[in-house]
Image (cartoon, rainbow, N blue to C red; front, side):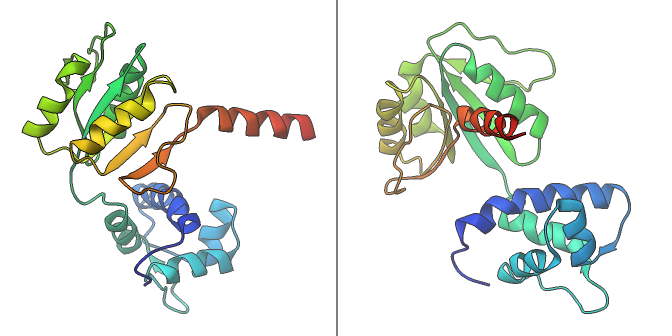
Amino acid sequence: MNDFLPDVIIRRLPSYYRQLQRLEAANIEQISSSQLGEQMHQTASQIRRDLNCIGAGGRQGYGYRVSGLKRHIGKMLGMDREHAMVVISSKGIGQAVLEDVAMMGGPFRLLAIFTDASLQTGGETPEVLVLPAAQLEAFLAAHDVEIAVIAVPSAEAPAVYDRVTACGIRAVWNFAPVDLDHDNRRATVVNVHLMDSLQVLSCKITQR
């Protein structure tokens, strides 16, 4: 397996993991690259290339053991250990992130939301601290936090990014409509642009 996987393969791993979860839940114990490719709308050769690249080659005439492959990919995705997170938000965006994390479950544990807006927790969401944004640095100094979620307007995002990286955060999930640290010099950043998905949808509608 390569020490550094191509980004295009990394981005496909969650799809493999979700599909393998479905197969395991359906009590399917083994699957071929052809079957997996058909289910995921990929070619069998693409499946084999991806899985070989992550060190998960199948057995000829047998294919892949579903539980073993899911466990292998899950470990690569960091699903075998806890990831503590905080959200820095405005205008209730943090509430949406809180609910998404609660529904995802797994190893992602949201510790606190920092906001100057009115924000309430409740329903089925876990107990999460809601604190003023001014307390961010003190909280990060006192807690072992791995991921910061930035969900603020684009004009505010660079300053928030500077604050969290200055506190030692090295992983950022950015929902602000601006790219942060594109070269990942200070932290590993995933920039999530919701408008991109809407524009892709619009393009597909236009082409039909």
